[in-house]
Length: 325
Image (cartoon, rainbow, N blue to C red; front, side, top):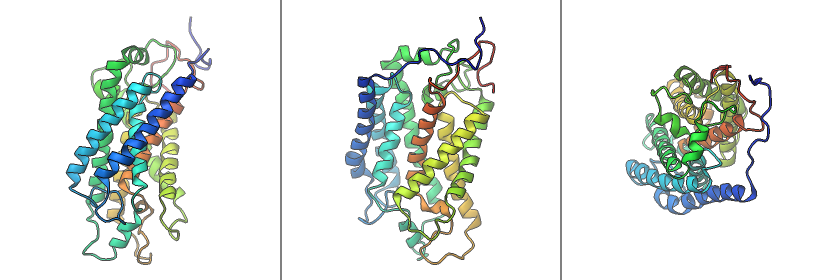
């Protein structure tokens, strides 16, 4: 018996009170770990400086230590909430990184430094730092996948079962681990790469639109995080309409591509020189690399939950190949 693709899911799974409590606890734990231990590792040497790989101790040491901390956080969050919430560990790490960025100065610190060429950030530093934070998120994704398979193997099998009539999200680490293996539940590579590129391009466009008129305003953390979150949400919504994927992996990669593309665009254009001293030459410079990656990752995972919400996702026809629009 064929099931129409417009047929809603009957009796979708719900989170009970204690399961919701576990999810909130995992998020709170991630914030607490990074605001305490994470801050000790990531705090800048200058008390008025931002949280950055180039404002504290050795950037490589910070990446290694924060990656280890993200692995621990992701493991604990996955044990607590991973059975019912895909990528709970990755989201908890991204949330913790975003919160710790709020304890330091804004990106305006680098803008003021750029007035003095002797202290101006090098053109390669911001994209390189973005890659470092993306590596930290990659560790969280990998650890979450390992712990998920150890602690919740039944849930992983159910999510990855291609015969189910519900198009549910799979952990980002599942697609990373099965890349190139031809797994039936994995997103086809062409669709996955299309999704990644659409997130990056649509995100850059959305960021530009949402940043219009901000040139004369002071740089604030809340404003910067909102623009990134809103841009990524819009970009992911568009990407899921054009090229639906099974996990948040491809959206997260799109966030990384968006961030590096934004900084490279600033490097190539260099601004028109019309802004007064202390005002960034581009709206892309109003956000810290850490905030691009952490807030963007959190938004990408949240949009994956939204796109695969069992209350919204229609049942899939057995005759409709996965990934077909």
